[in-house]
Image 1 (tube, rainbow, N blue to C red):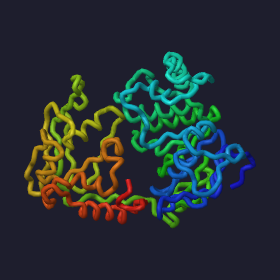
Image 2 (image 1 turned 90 degrees about the vertical axis):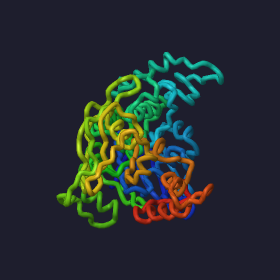
Image 3 (image 1 turned 45 degrees about the vertical axis):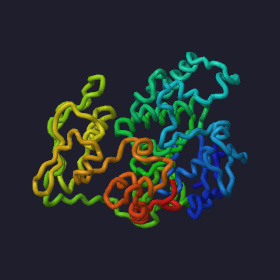
Image 4 (image 1 turned 135 degrees about the vertical axis):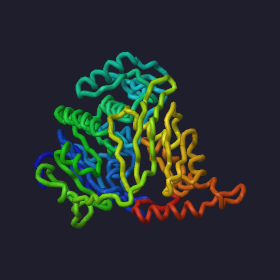
Length: 414
């Protein structure tokens, strides 16, 4: 596909390796101003790594980057900001005890075109004014004085986007921005991105969701196993073509949903009520049954109790009243109310919980794959007193890597 315009960003022959893993190989990519580009590919296809090089997190082993036709070196996020490039990462980089405004101005070396002297006090009133102007211009809903620990995931993401705009970015990269958003929140985000495009901003969305590509993007660039496959005009392609390019073969998109067989109740929630420490009711007499062989969806906009519901079932959230019954195949019921996750596991109940904040709450980022696996098993029988069984979680980590095709140098990778 030919375009006579000079790209805002050109990446040529970009290669990046991590040990024996080739994350990107000879990638060529053009990004144009005033467009929304979807960077599409399966998990592990090199999308985030490629954009991390453009945003200064990584430095390419080979290749060149051009901004408006001129070769540049981007060795740090500061270099990227100097060229008007900002990235909103999938895992947010915010200080929980700071307000939105404090997070947004954190690390700012200049304010209103003037260098901020070290140890000087930043004018937070004028900073908050500028933040509100950005929000009004694009349709963001941000309270500059709200603490991050009181925010929903979508609010935190909004703060991250405003932060890069505050720093002057006109090329924005969003890494899997809808991964933890509800459909309503996703549509709100897309409306903001359309406003940004109308203002001449360039937006790159890293995703693997085809319906989102079709809804929001002008063009779609496809990566497969670290290599650039091609760029398509979104309105001229379809989900089938994009999928085939992503995986390298013909894929059947029709999902077969067979009726569950031998259905039995497995989890029964009865009159479950959960209140916050301040006495605010988050769940009010909720009742439902989850059966064997079924996938049960919990629908609702952010803040409507989904988080509290799942945490209560997992033993992480105290409840006001109600029952959480685990039902065995023979009909025996175990009430999980009052049990913590360890007690639930000790009872022999096989229950797993993937939290909303996967990195902050679900994993220990500075521990490797095998050690994260071990967090669920180190108390179990089989470990000698004072010693832990590392072989079993290491084997499990390798099994996950093999069966789910996780791209990583090995089980000792963090």
